[in-house]
Amino acid sequence: MVLNVLQLTDFHIFSDPKTKFFGVPTIKTLKDILVKVVDLNITFDHIIITGDLTSDEELISYQTVKELLGDMISKCKIIPGNHDDRKLIRKVFPECVENKNGPINFSISTNSWQLIGLDTHVFGKLYGTISDETLLWLKSMLNKYKNKNTILFQHHPPIPVKTKWTDLLGLKNPDPFIETLKQNPQIRLISCGHVHQEFQGHLENITIFTTPATSVQFQKGTDFLKCDPIPPGFRIFSFDNDNWKSKIIRLDELKYPPVEN
Image (tube, rainbow, N blue to C red):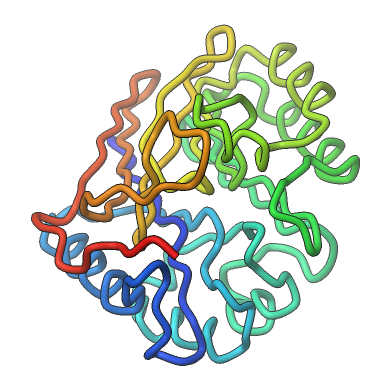
């Protein structure tokens, strides 16, 4: 039986609906993305939101996201990004979070795949890290399901994406985490957000993706932040026993061109 998974990331919603992110009305782009998702006519078993639901970390912003997601909420798991607040995520989305305190991680075990979400949030910082607590938890999940193919979802990518300024804001002190990855060959995939661009790389036998934002896109390969005038998007996965497929889907047009600050 095929398992279908949707990844959404980097909404950057504000409490004031008139506020724009690099000139883009992010509430409107998220609405358009969700319409596109429905139009695919795919039954998604799980929806993974990989952080930066808001830009201002306000209660109203999270409530807006929940309202926009509607009935999709029942299939959602959420991990925080650098622009998130764990307490508010737990307050607004209790059904999407597995634990009541500490890092917001999750594990979903299916017939042939394990889906793991890792919290890389560092309070007050743009970069991320895998805390000792999260790393210990990850090791326990990998040991528990060591014979299952595994995909990790996290906000910050564990390797450089070859865009200088975003790589400076990536995962700090990654060595213990990377060593754990290397010791667990069942990890097949890692899919991230944060960089607002599509990327594919490898760490030994692990394929590493980043996923377009539902808001503003950033150009690849630049030394400094530069917006990319292409439509927002999302990523879908299908898992069939040991096999997997992934695809980026974008809106058909760029309705709201970004503006450099």
